Image (cartoon, rainbow, N blue to C red; front, side):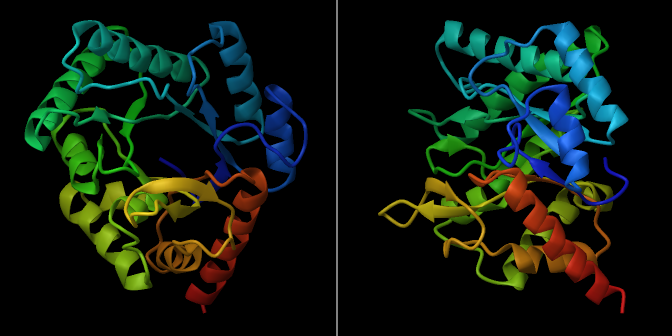
Length: 285
């Protein structure tokens, strides 16, 4: 996906009050080179505005992605909700294509009364239908089912990897904070990160792990100790720690896109990039 490890915010920056095309120049100015446009409430931007944003991103060497609306449940047994979910995912992919985005992150759905196998099959079928529709319209963008932070949601690491293995045009969004929260604070060391990277490689191959699309933040768990409660900035004291992941990315020569989802967005993305650059210098000694 990327020619190098790229870093950027989930949405427009907080370090300066700029939106739209002007934000692309700011991101480049501060040393960032990616952004995930947030269409999490609805897909509202018109095609022409998307093209203008995409042009500004291209001129400033900013790799764009898009996050689809939260109101997606591809495991819904209600026909109207299922259709609406597929339509919203398709609309987000289409908008992303207009702006030149390479990846569309989405939350697959909820188990509710379904067992996990049945929910996965429904999600897979829904994604396949959206992919077929995109192919018919010649819309090229990767669909990114995200590892989700709550046990009630479809989106375990195994599930998103299986979706990517079984369905064309699917490339998972690996949210390490969500994996950490969903599994009860599982990421405590470099070895824990390594196990995740190794699983991605063994399931999807070396190119998939080299070119991962990553979300990262520190995260607070619920009072039960399982599941996400709230995202936090770097250095908050909550896990997981970014430094061991940065070391592995540098040591293994990976070139992921890393989207910062902390409340400080671009400001913490800059910190993450600096942590990675230090790790890269050490790895090259």
